[in-house]
Amino acid sequence: MSMTTGPRLASAVLPAVRRLAAAGCPSATADAEALAAESAAAAGDGALERFEALVARRAAREPLAYILGRQTFRGLALRVDSRVLVPRPHTGALVEAGLVAPRGAHVLDLCTGSGAVALALARERPDLRVSGADISPDALAVARENGDRLGLEVSWIESDLLGGAPGPWDAVLANAPYIAEPDEPELARELIVHEPPGAFRGGLDGLDIVRRLIGQASKVPWLALEVGDAHAPEVGEMLRAAGFREVTTRRDFTGAERVVVGRR
Ligand SMILES: C[S@@+](CC[C@H](N)C(=O)[O-])C[C@H]1O[C@@H](n2cnc3c(N)ncnc32)[C@H](O)[C@@H]1O
Image 1 (cartoon, protein in one colour):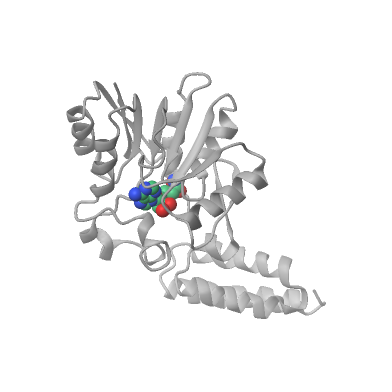
Image 2 (cartoon, rainbow, N blue to C red):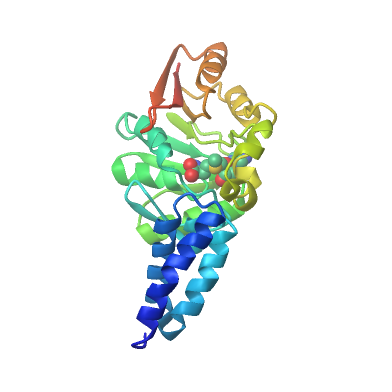
């Protein structure tokens, strides 16, 4: 970087914060600073031009994680792009549900996306035999790349729910798509415009995929499902009706009921 690029870049940050705030970005200051740091690190003398280009992408409400190409999840530095949903911190509750699996259990992370849940389990419980499955070959390519780069052993399976991944499994965890169609207009543009629709659309009531998965899970002894706000009681009933005798709910770090666990 030349002697003048640093000050020029620094003086571009405040206008960028204003631009991002005007575009409705909820964390405009932090985002502008992250993009400035990224531009300074990656682009040498072209840092200012690179910064302007990245700010334009963020002003169009592209998720910061896609622009940077990475997202941290439970301390794992994951590569992410528009082939996968950006892993959310509240999904840590699904990992925590899986941490209680018995020693050496065969665990499936269904709807694995970037591989976040499977890879976190593989790192935090190296005794487990972890697999990750997704219907999207593009998502699986991202998950596989993440696993290889992080040196974590997970088997990856292309499958429509349990159809191509019959097990047997000791435990199945899934963050399946669960956004209800009528809720979409209320949701962040980052999700609705930029993330893969197949990763979040759950039909009219949000439960189409969860319902189908529970219907397939007659041989699964332990099933943990991440659920949308207010879905926990209904999903709990669905699990009981499907023969899961013990049904419990786990809260995420915000206090919301986020994971419903059924045990036979
Ligand atoms: C909400 S994302 C979860 C991604 C990741 N587990 C996470 O928590 O960040 C849902 C994932 O389910 C996958 N998916 C959607 N329908 C599916 C199906 N019928 N069978 C398997 N995977 C499916 C999508 O491709 C997407 O990667």
